[in-house]
Length: 98
Image (cartoon, rainbow, N blue to C red; front, top):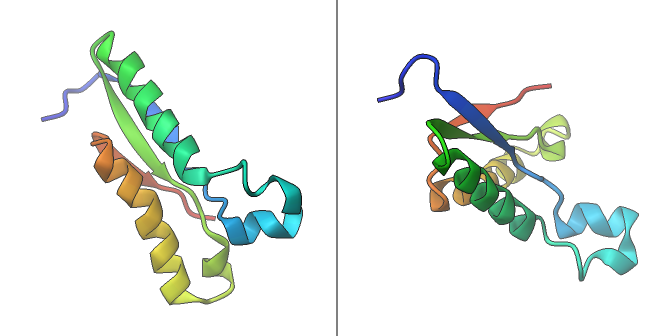
């Protein structure tokens, strides 16, 4: 159970995919993996939170496919973000809207 007044560290999901990146950084895609960035962010947030009385919030980032009206792609992108948060057992998830 969460307690009032606890410190919370927020982990924002980095939503770039290979498809997004290739349109901007064709040569960098092999070095740039959003999943690894998100995993590292979760590990760091948990490490810092464990040093005190804090919790970790996973933050779902808006996805481009929603604006394009592609609901299957939107669901897949949100599920990919959630998978990292489930794997690293964040305490709760916040969904950003735009």
